[in-house]
Image (cartoon, rainbow, N blue to C red; front, top):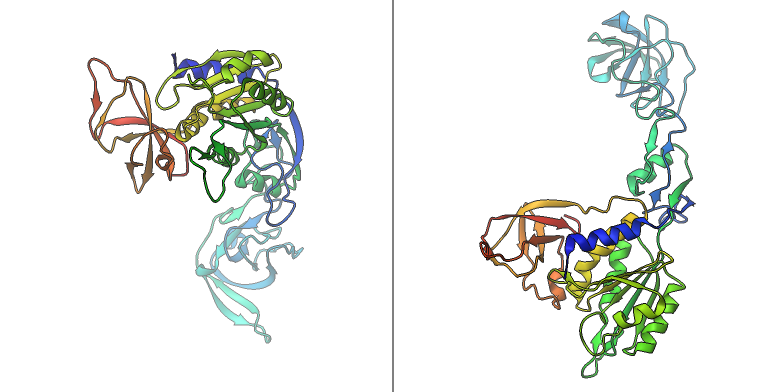
Length: 412
């Protein structure tokens, strides 16, 4: 059996051999409820700022634009500067201009006095400010945002390989950038195997099992920013499996199957792969759950992942092996986010490295109950995979409170 690290190395090396392709996508949502086509994609190159932000000197606070050298005293209010409005005046020494937060600081002024450091002296007949008293001295530049202080024209707005989510798309919108070059995502097929599987329905016949792997993996892919091109099912015959693989290869760059890769008499995938031109890179991994995981490559650069049929095994191996391959395919770092946590209870170690499901909340960690690979409930609310080492002659268990590595698989 192959160690997890070696299996992952072979996967990422194969994924990296795929040439990066780019396309231009809109950054604007088509509807109020929709997402921008570029959402979740990765920038294909560096994006530079087109303009300064702000493109005018802006007030940090509500107050009065002043000539800082004037100092405290009584001054006439000669103008008002609001957001989106340019008064067009040049402020002269001995006068002030009312300015709102974000409003334009007029030419001639070099500072803003916050309204809390002023008081009204007199008003005009229609109730507007006429004169005010400045109570404190300010230095040049006080509470003034210079041109380009947030973003300077020509500055790197987004690096290449940056995934586009809310903040990134907001940055692009702030620059009026309505389309961006992105790296093309792989087309993905999900295929379940097994005569016992049926789609969701009201009743099951004896011996039937509802297919939970296809919807679970499909949603995991969507949550990670990928769309599924094809969902299918292979009956348990060598012919059906081989023909199904040929069909999938015509539509997808990466093929994910669940089941059919173990040692059963109806497990035909490993036998079928060479008939469609695949080279099996490995067929067993030293881990729990997920030992039957299979990985194969094609001369075309397409990738095949044979994930175990047990629901937990399929989801765990997706996070461990498939997601890193998808990231590398887009030219991203494959390493997952991880943290060190205290083991919440004593655990006997397995001969294989084990990945147990846990929930991190309120600063602590809880296991999700029984860790059997068929028990889908153990994935409910799980946002961590705790990585336990294999049993050895000198270490057969880990005590409660032992620090272990935890892969982050969901929102904390």
